[in-house]
Length: 256
Ligand code: ATP
Image 1: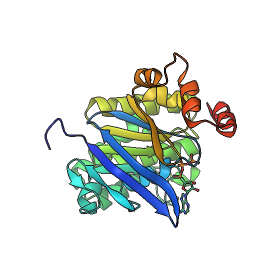
Image 2: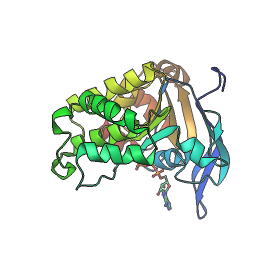
Image 3: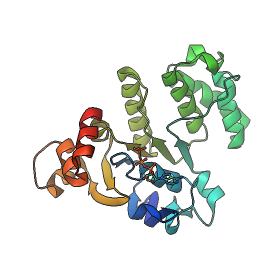
Image 4: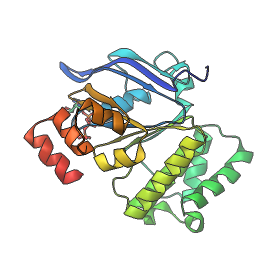
């Protein structure tokens, strides 16, 4: 892959559930070291899009290339380059944080000599250094999120996908997550996150796509989105003007 090629490229991404078109011809191009947000109201198709991008769901039509590797043709190679944090991550309660991280490292065939050092570094970075040998069954939601995040990073992925990552995190943990994602991006990791909380996208993301009813309605930096909407209003106003509807407006104002 040359430097100018995107890290993630999707073309004509479409997914049907029966006759219902959940994602309808989405094109995306996400660069190395970019923090990219996927925004949209409830049911817009964010999770479906993310699950296709990470290879958990097969597109009905369209292509996905991650780091030069075709996700549909070579899913194993493509998946080795990414990490995915679902909105409700699964953890084994009867393992300690460290054991869980080591377990995931084994799934990714991380060389054993790297696992100890890297898991110690990451557990400390996330403030779990002194809880590393406690069973995760006693952990809060936010702590569990952090353990999953450490595990997701153990194989040094080139792209990390996060579905609604700040749900359940207190402001301090949300801030920590933001700082860590920025550090990862600065070191060249691409970050793709979905959210319906506009403030998060505005603060965290370099660029974002707004989707509604499975289609792209806007894409760009916050500044570019302002331009596209031809107004100097808040991102919330832009979001609402593009995705429309009083019901969406009510939801977004409650959530933002
Ligand atoms: P939210 O913010 O509410 O999580 P979302 O943007 O992530 O929403 P998706 O979960 O991708 O939206 O769903 C997009 C649409 O596809 C919705 O109308 C949903 O009902 C539909 N859908 C999702 N999964 C399935 C499925 N397994 N079978 C049928 N329809 C589905």
